[in-house]
Amino acid sequence: MLKIKEIQASSIITESNLPESDYVINPYVGCSHACIYCYACFMKRFTNHEEKWGEFVDVKVNAPDLIPKNNKKYIGKQIFMSSVTDPYLQLEGKYKLTRQILEKIVDWDIKLGIQTKSDLVLRDIDIIKRCKNVEVGFTITTTNDSLRKEVEPFTASFENRIKALKELKNAGIKTYVFIGPILPELTDWKEIVLQTKDFVDYYLFENLNVKGSIWYSVEEWLKAKHPDLLNKYIEIYSTKNNYWINIKKEIENFCEKEKINGKVYFHGK
Image (tube, rainbow, N blue to C red):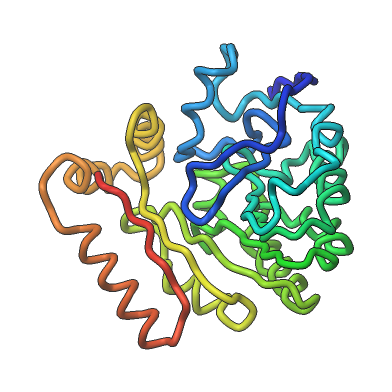
């Protein structure tokens, strides 16, 4: 059961630690996608929630009111929606916080990035088209919908993400796909590229991070759904090996061969 709480935020545009982003906007705290691999689960320790990550969302109901009228500070900067939540959670259909925020920053002289796993973004295509410099990306971990339901159960299907990417591209909006996390032996990143390259401008690739509590979620999932892969994952993440080095080279060679604009953001084990 998802616990929903309406809260008053003190700020909404915060400085970013992400590459290629100066500021981030997170209209919600927490996430309802319940992805087993979510790096943002570290946020739980700042929220005073007893629920598991993925089982609560705090709604910053005053978020649009926190957008400043004086935007000189942000001229020429890169603002990203969102870093530790999805700006298009199912709750966005009700609260419309992301839409209200977009309405307030649509004319700003910024580079705006939007990343989501939801085709709800199409609702706001009328506003997004008006932005001076904008790109919309979809996170895609797999083309296999059965696997998607295992690792990110409350997200849009691969098919719906494909349709949304096509519609965004047809509207003249720059698009990208974030292929991540790449799940060893399961994520067919080549297939993701081949099925989307006609309407995607560039790709980002990230490997699975199992730091902190993420490993325990991944381990439970493997034991339940893919016990044959458990030892392989332990080998990848617990021994010295070249698994990710080789995958990185393979991605780079593939992108060069297929004339794909791709960047690899792999981290250590």
